[in-house]
Image (cartoon, rainbow, N blue to C red; front, side, top):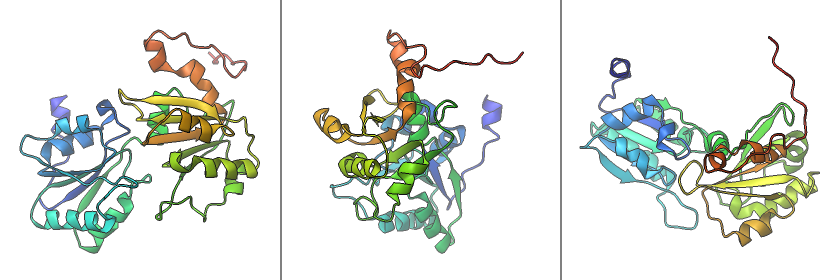
Length: 279
């Protein structure tokens, strides 16, 4: 294992690595991510990074928080991007550690373009996005042969913090059997209404997965029509992934974390017949 680790890339001075930390569980860090953490001089990390992931940092690494939280004082995105440029130009090995994947609603593209603008060399290290990995920890697959052949990923708010008006909610409601939403819990009342107006059934299953893949993970199963009321009554707080679609019903059979704690799983929540594998 150590010999293989020695073949991983060297983190050069004056370079920036944009690294995805995954949805929360440190075990979901990639080898490239751990390699970056061990070599970095300074780690600029965001609010969605589980601080347990930072335990892989080298003993001399400087940790710099650059988290953004809705409704709270936060650094401006442009300031964060320029800070990466400043640190790299000072000769540091700069690790920009982001929750999930840098290029999936993570503003990694904006930061990378700023680095290009200032001729700062960089590397992208993908991470497991919460919309896939976080749901898997809740026992909800984003695709299943019996339910859907497509999945739509979207954000619940735009740069202004409001529900995106540019989104064609009617087309989304009609075209995608499964909808996975980031940063949508705050506006779920408006979003649910728009999806129902677009043709989705009020009794369609919905799940909220908060603090996905961590010890604090909480899952609320409800319906599109009751989503706003139930999430308020449950007093849930972000970060959260919201998923709409029949795949939510599979959680009763695939909640592997619940099974480890002794919960009995349903054998066939969809009531479908399964073909035996050939051979």
